[in-house]
Amino acid sequence: NAGVTQTPKFQVLKTGQSMTLQCAQDMNHEYMSWYRQDPGMGLRLIHYSVGAGITDQGEVPNGYNVSRSTTEDFPLRLLSAAPSQTSVYFCASSYGREISQPQHFGDGTRLSIL
Amino acid sequence: GQQLNQSPQSMFIQEGEDVSMNCTSSSIFNTWLWYKQEPGEGPVLLIALYKAGELTSNGRLTAQFGITRKDSFLNISASIPSDVGIYFCAGRFNGNQFYFGTGTSLTVIP
Image 1 (tube, chains in turn brown, blue):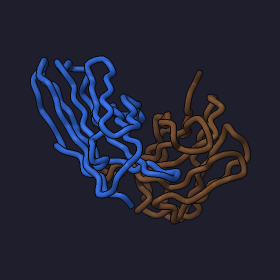
Image 2 (image 1 turned 30 degrees about the vertical axis):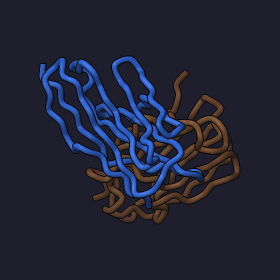
Image 3 (image 1 turned 45 degrees about the horizontal axis):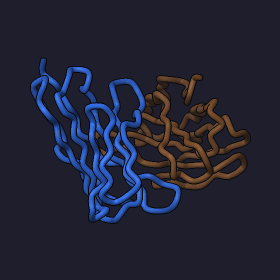
């Protein structure tokens, strides 16, 4: 099993550009989430989904959109990239619709906004 | 959001030594998790704790869910070079969000 797969691994954008970070899991997990990791701040939740067609905001949702059309995929969209969005982004998934189960993380996407 | 404080921020230890780190919260939690992250990779779950006072081991790692439900502890016995990494705690009360600590960076000197 691949687990949680994130693409791309690295990306450089110019301010104002848009892009989509991809996340796919093959474990049939209902719960999926996106975090950003910044130095000295741990991981902060951006958006999460408890199943196909259902999404909700986390701690730092501004500037990001998500959708969940299938159980497997949970893409994160930056509509107009800003330097403050330079970060490492992690996608995670867990079994069930509630986050009672520990999450499995992907290897991250390192994003730089110039 | 919830504030989780991890200490120490970093540790430099000799191979073979024991390691202790902790995580404290401003709020009570129902679940505590401990993760390890190595460079260029995502966090990997080490131990999950679901009850106050619970003590759980995973090989040389032992974690405890504090009685007050506002803290958790992770111990590593007889450290080895592959223990190097950043250790994160995460906690949850109710709802669909875990809150993460800022991490403890561990360096093991052979």
